[in-house]
Length: 350
Image 1: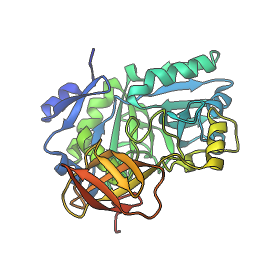
Image 2: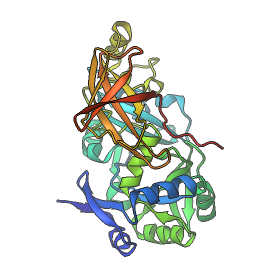
Image 3: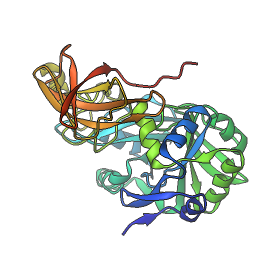
């Protein structure tokens, strides 16, 4: 059964067009994807991201369990910080990429992708049956406020606004809420998790300040311009963090599931490599289009039109990893030369 956000009626009132995503019916856009994209890049916008996973994991043994299950080392961050990390399988493939919010020495929130929420939560429950685990999705709404003006809006509405990759226990109109300086757009801002009964008031307060809503369509084009991976496209259980250029989120100084496979991969070399590329014009490289570079072959994992660059941009894997050979993408039966780009594709000039 498709799930609706507690803010569904508000979205409809604001003119949202809906789409099914990860078992949820969520706004894909209100005006247009390009308008909402440019709004976030120029000022600020807010997204309902209640479909994303989130659960509390607290008690003796929580830290060591997280260290064992995830490839980044949560012991490297202090309470009051957040961390990007991944859950791997024994072969080093990415089961999920997620964010950890650390509140205390043994007190955490785990935020997996929407499609993997139940699976990740079950893995934590099985690994540490004595640690308290509470599913937060039924009782909360998650909103992302993103854009260059987003920190100022958050500071005006919350008792304390989060800084980049910091977490805060704060308040909105006397109600306790939690927030982190994280997002998925390449812009400043934060993600706020509120009790269901105050979420609509917070969303309306954003609108009153001129922060318009944006849908999942703009969220996807923004994350692609920022060069951020999407689980199920750039990341899956057949792909390792090293192949995806995510070694920064792997700490080899602690033991974790998949570590031996990644160490072997570092010794023997990558099987494939994620590459970024840009077309000369407005041709759009779609998901699944073929890629080639010399003797390397592969396919586009994410591709779209960049509203800021007004060119086609894309990510894809090539096997084996290419050297300096020119990259081409097949668009409508023709092989088109593209420029290789190390993401992010879009960088703010100021």
